[in-house]
Image (cartoon, rainbow, N blue to C red):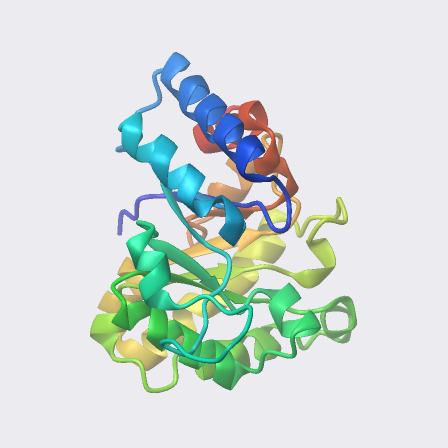
Length: 258
């Protein structure tokens, strides 16, 4: 099954709106200079909330083929929820992707599998694509229970979600011990878990649906290792952190030019 690769840059809490404008413009120009064919891969940036309007303006005015989205979403439609950002607000800004269940949200904001599930449903209902994150800490990896741990997260995140809606989702496997550490799971390590995720999706929704869904790898991805990682059969792209903050490096990742 041929799946279009997806390369998404998660900026986390970096870049003010002026820096965001510069970064997106430089990324677009670098990809254009290298005659990148957007039919070969979907390119997405995930800025902080404060940058979204600026990114929207640049993308729309320059008619860029770069998509963009948010790093989180509220489960609430509106109301007295100070600091939260709703699905309708993100839609108005032209967002097409939302990260849900990132390990940093799970750890620092105590987001449970049930909350991740609810945010996935809210994102789907608004017509955006959830990038559903899962992954294990170092102690779980060392104990050898990492596959079971991740599959439990998948079960929780997709609870009550139909096959039709599951097809609209992307899954991102990020071993927590490899995020921002310089450590990276070997391509075979990543394939082991991404393959198990696809098997779980087949169990939940059937093989045809599982074959169409994209599973990404994230965790210290850079231009020097992305090509080998994406060569594995069940890895369909990457959720990139720090390396996405440099236009030339993220462009190389997108182009798989190590």
